[in-house]
Amino acid sequence: MNILLLGSGGREHAFAWKIVNSPKCTKLFVAPGNAGTSSIAENVDLSPNDFEKISAFVIEKNIALVVVGPEEPLVKGIVDYFEGNEKVSHIPVIGPSQKGAHLEGSKDFSKKFMERHGVPTAASRTFTKESLEEGLEYLTTQTLPIVLKADGLAAGKGVLICTTLEEAKSSLKEMLVDNKFGEASSKVVIEQYLDGIELSVFVATDGISYRILPEAKDYKRIGENDQGLNTGGMGAVSPVPFADQEFLSKVEEKVVKPTVNGLKEEGIKYNGFLFIGLMNINGEPFVIEYNVRMGDPETQAVLPRIKSDFLEMLVHMGQKTLESYDLEIHSFAATTVVLVAGGYPESYKKGDKIEGLQSADGEEHSILFHAGTKSSEENTVVTNGGRVLAVTGMGDGVAIALENAYNTVSKVCWNDLYFRRDIGQDILKLIK
Ligand code: AMP
Ligand code: GLY
Image (cartoon, rainbow, N blue to C red; front, side):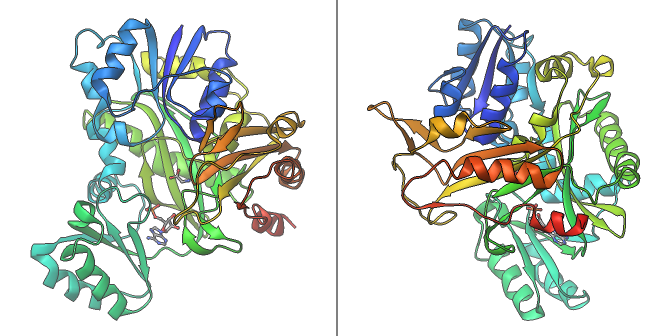
C-alpha cells in the first residue's frame, strides 16, 4: 500500500522508519518531512494543514492510508474534512475527529470529559474574562502552589505553576485580560497542584478497542537537573521502572478504559493515538493532560520497542479491527537524547552544517532520527530547527541503552550543538 505521513519532526522520522520496515509498505510519502525521512521515503512539499492539497495528492498517488503526526491538523479537523469529502471519505486517516482532538485543543473540554467519566485528575475550575473576579476569589481559597492553564494550544507554554497568591492573581489577570497567550488564554483552568512522579502512557485505539504501547518518561526542561525553560522535550526513557505492573494495571482500569469508553459513549470518532500525561502519586495515577497524538521525543524511544508490525497496527486502527492485532514489545530499554541548536527554546540559528552523520548512523544499538534538518545543495545536511536530531540507544536496561545513545551522540557535531547529559540519570538513581 501507498501511505502518506504528515509532519516533519523526529516523531515522524521514527514513524517513517517503522512504516518502511513493514512488508505491507509499497511507498511512503512524508509531507513535508526532513532530511532523515527523505533518505527512506519521498518527501512532498505540502503543508499538513492544507487539507485541499493533501486530499488531491492522496487521490493522485493512490494513497491507502494517511497518518497524522502533529496535533495541529487534527485540531483543525483533517479527519472530518476527509470524511466529508466523498472522493477521499473511504481512505482512513489515523487521528481523532476534531471533537476528539478537543481533548488536547481545550483543557476545559478535557477536564470536563474526565469529570464526566470518572477519570482521576486534579480538581479544577475554569474562568473567563467575565468571571475574573470569581477566579481571583477562588484563588484565595486554594492551597499553593497552584496551576494555571491556558485553555487552548499555546505551544507547550500555557501552563504556569504559581508559588505565591500574588503571582497566581497577576498571572490570571494577564492571561484573561491581557491575552498573555492570545486566544488560547481566553479561558483559564485553575487546577490543584499534583505532587508526584510524572510519566506518559500511549494508547492506540480504533474507537472500540485499544492497545497500550510502552510507557515513557520525558525531560522537558532545557537545562540539566530539570532547570531552565520548558522545551518540546530533550530526551525520553522507556520503560519507566517506577511504573510497575500494578501501577500500569491501575492506569488501564482507571484511565484508559473509562477514556476509550467515554469517547464511544459520546459518539466521538477516534481512530488514533492518545498520549496520557500522568502523575504517579503514591502508586495512584492522576491524569495531567491528554494529547491526541504521539509525543516527541517519546515516540523515538517507544517505537523501537514495538516488535510487531507497526504499519499493520495502523491499518487495524483505520479499519476498526484493532481487536485482532497482537501487540508485541521488546524487553530491551530505549533511551533518546535530543540534540538542539544553541539558544533553543528561544532564538537559535539555522543552516549550520552537521558533521558526522554517516558515522553516527552506522553505530550499532542506536538509531539516529532527524528532526529539524534539511539537505542543502552541496549534498550536506544542515540544521533547520531548534530540535535537530534525536538519538535513541537500545540495550539491556536503561544504563546500557544510555551508554549506546551517548556514544552515538558523540559522533555528531555542528556549531552551537547542545544536549542534556543527564537524561535517565534520575531513573538510574531510583533503580539503585
Ligand atoms: P501540560 O501542558 O498540561 O502538559 O503541562 C506542562 C507540565 O506542567 C506538565 O508536564 C507537568 O510537569 C506540569 N503540570 C501540569 N499540570 C500540573 C499539575 N496539576 N500539577 C503539577 N504539575 C503540573
Ligand atoms: N514531549 C512532549 C510532547 O510531545 O508533547
